[in-house]
Image 1 (cartoon, rainbow, N blue to C red):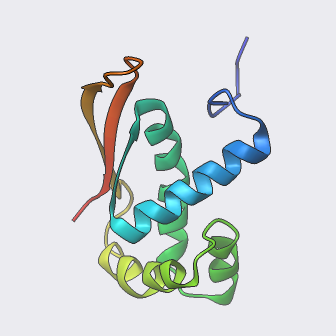
Image 2: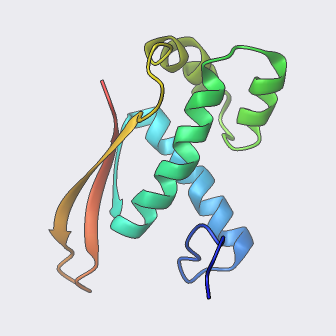
Length: 117
């Protein structure tokens, strides 16, 4: 039984999976849109929502916690300068997932994850 077990393994070891998701969240915040598989998009959403919520409070503690996920200093400053002020009145739901259909090569369900305006 999978009671109280959250998240997907995505057929990868833990270190590879966490590195891939950190990079994807950084790219999502940099470009504000990202095309990937549906399962990865749902995991990216989980991390991105938490990081953006951290970006709403501009304290040293929240900056350090966000820097543990985001590896690019420019994206980190964008999070606290632009995105934090953009979403300060929004209680959650900063991302949107739009399904695209299946990929041609392996029929994997594809999706676009993007930041809400």
